[in-house]
Amino acid sequence: MSSADPIRLAVAGAGNRGQAYMDWAREHPHEAVLVAVADPRAAARSQISRGFDNVREFDDWRALLAASDELDLDAVVVATQDRDHLEPCLAVAERGLALLAEKPLGVSARECEEIVAAVKRADIPFAVGHVMRYTPYTDLVRRVIDSGRIGRIINIQHLEPVGWWHAAHSYVRGNWRNTATSSPMLLAKSSHDIDWISFVTGKRIETVASFGSRAHFRASEAPVGAGTRCVDCAIEPNCPYSAKKIYLEPAQRTGRVEWPGTVLTDGDTADDVAEALRTGPYGRCVYDCDNDVVDHQVIAFRFDDGTAGTFTMTAFSDHINRRTQIFGTHGSIDGDGDGVDIVDFRTGERERIEVDVSGSFDAGGGHGGGDAGLISAFVGAVASGDQSLIRSGPDETLRSHLIVFAAEESRRDGTVKTIADPATGPG
Image (cartoon, rainbow, N blue to C red; front, side, top):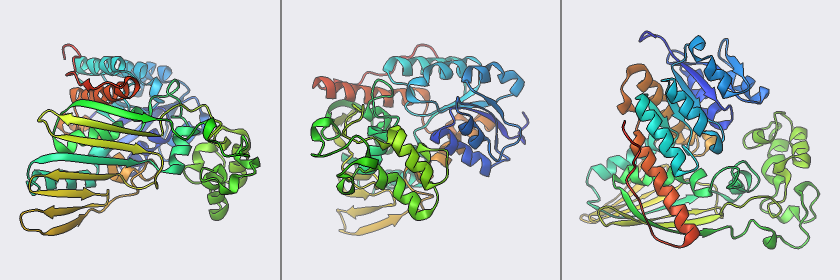
């Protein structure tokens, strides 16, 4: 590969996350090109290949990697489901190819340790899908903290308002509803946030305690008269979690199917959505699903310098930007994803600074520029050999996952957990 050639990418898993990263590649054809995709779904392979020339399609990642020399690959994006990361990530590292793994890296500490150890042995460019590190908003928060305007950080409070309909979509009816088939809510959704808190503060989380439960999305909470599917439920018009409201009515209003409706069907009409609600998992009553992940959770944590903070995840909110308050010795920051409000205790001055956010803050809108920022940094690191372009190294990535695993253990057994330093062997 010459310095003028685009990076040759393959994608294992052509779902929403794989599609998001390849959207950037389509817009930057001189920097990266998709040459192969593996996914058991032909329609997903066809969709992700759109706009690229001569993409080889495979129904399994093993077949793709077996052809890696023939394909002349530089890097692989592993965007399979949470429980299917370990084997392809290890195989990519074994072949010495650069690796971008969607978060969470693995569903257990052991899996994450295995992948990080393999990456370090292979000495390959490596990134994980912690896209919140790469947003313009994150850059702003870090600049304000690093400027010293608020003094030394004493406390941070961070809120992840998942949103009532988004929780119902992804974590009650959807792919991340069940720990056995996916991962705990904290790992699937909020590993972003725990990683981000450490990143923006520059502090190491040392101790955690956590509480939470599945308080509402269960059979005992079902209203009287609730049916098993929204399409034939007598009380559906008054239910905030109605699948007809979330998926069908938007398609009927606009005449097209957009995210999250695109998750339900490959079709492009309201009739296609209606059929999916009659027969598929997204038409089920939220009180009659096989979900077991929590719908609210809080973590209290102590940093290595003795300061403290809290994190709250709740399904019972509007689907809005994350909220963060950072309290320092000389001032405070109140952030909302679009900008920050700063109070200077010394002068009493108040200032609002906003950023030009690219797209919306959620997965459907590119995470406020985070998706593009991550894949751009990864491709740049592969092309130049400068791994400092990637904002978290293997050990840092592992440690952020270990914090999440410790917090989930704390929630389950009611004890305070101390985070051990990563130990992944020689690298």
